[in-house]
Length: 457
Image (cartoon, rainbow, N blue to C red):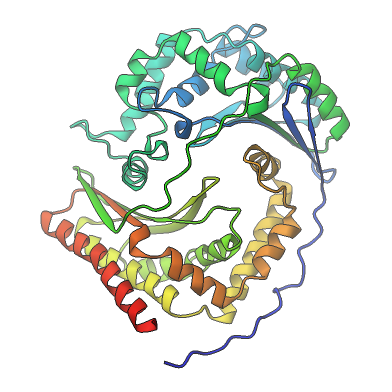
C-alpha cells in the first residue's frame, strides 16, 4: 500500500516569546536543593517544598503513611503549636498553606506577597525542623473520612484511579492507593509517623522552589536561616517500575452509581526518553480542546459521554497514558468502540499538517500562559530538580516539541497504543451483557492491532 510523504514543516508562529525570568539553583550545606525562578514582571510569589515520598516508596504494611504524615504536618510546630496558629500565621501574610501527596512526591506550597518571603520561609522552616505531630487520633478520623469517598456502601473500592492503577501496576507500589487502606490508617502511631517523616524529610530528599520577583541571593540566605538546621538524611530511591502492563486486560466493579466511569491506561515512556515529545504531541492531537477527535467524535457527534479526556502522568522512569470518560451504562460498549476506533486511526494514519501545527501552536501558548503562574513555575523547575530531570527552559521545551514530525507521532502511537500496554477499568451500574461486550472489545483491540502489524510486515 502506498504511503504519502509529509515534508517537515517549520514550527508555527516562529519561536516562543522570550521567557521573562531567570532560573538559579544552589545546594545548602545539609544537601537541600534550592531553585529560584526570578520573575520581575510579576507581583506575587510562591514557594513550594517538594519531598520524594508517596505511595511508590511504601510497602503494603505502611501504605498510606506518606499521605498521613502530610496531614500530621498541618498540626503545627514548635513555634506554632496548633493547626490554628500555623494557618493563622500563614494567612496573616495573605497566603494559604496547601499540601498534596501523589504516588511519588509530597508538596507543600504557599502563594504570598513578595515582601513576606522571609517570614513565610521561617514558618515553613520551623514546621519541617520541629513538627509537633499532635492530635493524631483526631487527624486519623479526618483521613478516614477522606477515604470514604473511595468506597461504596458495600465496602468496595470504587475510585477508578485506584482500581485502574492497582491492576495496571499489579504487585508494585505504583499500584497502591495514595490514601492507603483503612486498616493501616487505624493502626498508624505517632512514632511510625515521626519515623517516616525523619526517613523522607531529610534535606537531601527535598527541593525548595521559589518563584516571583525575588533575588536568588536573598532566597538562598533566608533558606539557609530557615532550613539550615534540617538533618541531611539521604536521598530515597523508589523501586523500578514494571516494563509493561501485561495487557490487554479489562476489569469492572459493579456499583449503584448513575454513570459508568471508564479509564484506559497505556504504559508510556519516561520523560527522559528521546521520543517523549512525540508522545506529548500525540496526546495533544487526541485531546487538546473541543475540536480534537476525542471530544468531537465521542461527545459532539455521537453523544456517548458528556465528558471525555486524555492525559499523561509522568512517573520518572515511566509514564501512563490515561483516557477517562463517564457514560450511561447502556453506552459503555459503544463508547469503548469509538475510542478504540480513534486510537486505531492515530496508529494507522499520520496526522494532518494543520492538526500538527495547531497542537504545537497551542503548546506554545500554554507555555507562555505559564509565565504568569508562580505556582506553576515552582512546579516546572522544582519537580524537575526533585527527580533529577534537566531544568529545561520554556524555549527548550518548545523546541523539543516543535521538531516532532507526523511520522514520529505515528510511530509512537503504534508503539504505545498497543494491546499489551493496555488496562481498561469500568466502575458503575452496567449489566453483565455490557461487561461481556466491553471485555470483547478490549480483546478485539489486540486482534486488530496484531492483524495490522502482520500486514505491515
